[in-house]
Length: 275
Image: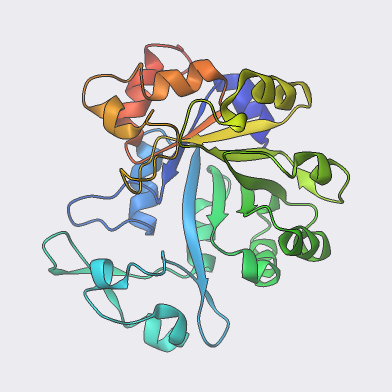
């Protein structure tokens, strides 16, 4: 599955943040990923963690109290223990959904979309082994903070996987990455101000000329830490998508991560008949 061809075809790709969740469907589950694909997602973003017996599952660690109604740390559990857990819904009633194994998620999504495996940079060797079992290398995008130890690790275990560093405010690594044995396809950009270096026309134009893709975030973890200078999902879904998703599109970002996949797709339909 060619990421660059998808961008060429559509102009802007929708990355569904942990799938599409709501009601009785928890995020980061196969059900949430199916819902996201139905609503038009091109990329599914998901969080990976490792159990004590080195098995990989999909869950955003640190969210155990909210999503499982338990004061636990899933990384301190074995796979047998993890598989006994059930998600709760927004009213804290237990659902039938369990934490999905990465193997099961990959098999469910084989050949269907691009996949961003996030928060797994300490376990890339295991991740690669899992992805290779399913022969899905060209569907997977890896990301990490722009640190030398991760560049080195990726060169050692997965240099042929699509990779994007996560940049914050400024770029200190893309020139370095161009000289590394990595499949450097672009960068995720997070910035609190429109004046940030990585939000500048100069930076964006330079990356485009180098054939790199740029990933922005409509998602908003905290109102105190805007990820795209306030051009967020919140603005987009409450009546002003031109100032949210539209601003990011016009700026030149190729991929926009959102918690509102269906609404973003409807907005993109007004801009591009491909949708």
